[in-house]
Length: 130
Image (cartoon, rainbow, N blue to C red; front, side, top):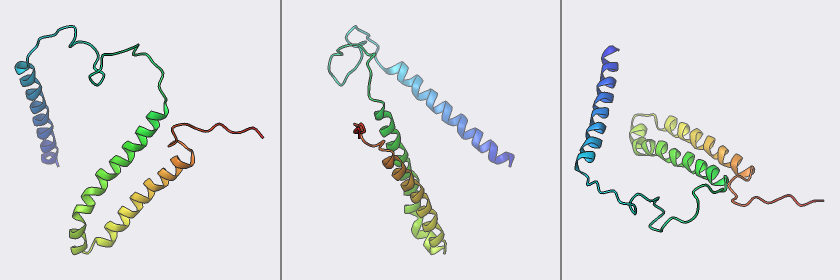
């Protein structure tokens, strides 16, 4: 038990050392010539115009959040799809398929919920009187 924890701690320590080494190496090797044009805000190659304090549609956040949820779904489904043949050969194919079906079903229910609440529409319709 303690050996397993030691393995995790060693890998965390090696990861932190590697990340620190790469950041430090980049800091040492990259050129540093700050000038006013380089220090301006970057807007896709265009010079910045107007104030950064503007109102934006909050629905962008909701749509981006829904995208991230379904993007993570693909990240969880892909390893099962890759290992599915081995699951079938080991006699666990039906169990793996049912677990995957339940997982995708829960996410599909979430999609239906978001769709029913009309959170995927960029411009919401205002109810008509009468």
